[in-house]
Image 1 (cartoon, rainbow, N blue to C red):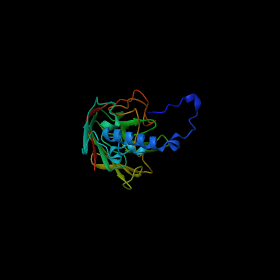
Image 2 (image 1 turned 90 degrees about the vertical axis):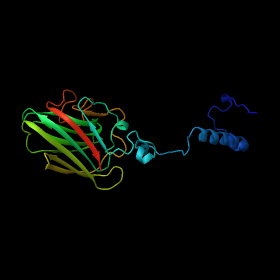
Image 3 (image 1 turned 180 degrees about the vertical axis):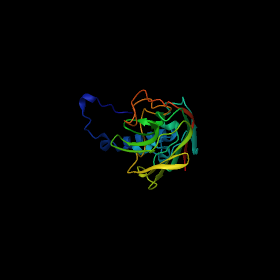
Image 4 (image 1 turned 120 degrees about the vertical axis):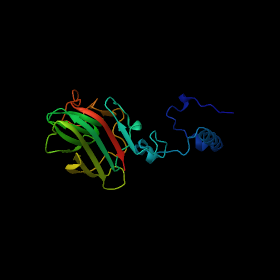
Length: 232
């Protein structure tokens, strides 16, 4: 039978009942083990940040082994577990767009927000990519010239320095197959960008990843045909 102890007798729970009753401790441990196995609790994972990344945590991923994701205008608020994972891995983002003139502006695609993420956008007709490291450090690259009216392909490529969470790497921007800007990102966010801000196509819907455009009213003024995100 269970022996009851009233909380008023040991309100701080300083009394070591496990040491006093080792047989009861073993009995309760056996109950925990049995229930843990039945409910698939084991193996117990005491990692913290690493568990945000399914590949590192070793759990099923919604996108599975998929290496490419194509998204279109109107697709907004895509949370990280429903979007291809680009954190710290070689990847490209290829946007097929059309602009009416050389003054086009606005966000083509953005993931997360002010406290970390990345974005591809036009400002004064010039394509840009910005990587935002926890709002502490920003790496922004941009084309020297504005896009002329018509169709264009903008591609961003990230080449990591190493295969480890938080690695830095090369940041490369190309327009119509020609490399136009390059920089080094010192470090990247290792496990998650945001708990509540997703990826948006055609605008940056919540807080702005880059201060280069406003938090609202940043919709792309041209036409987006499609954007393909591919991990290598």
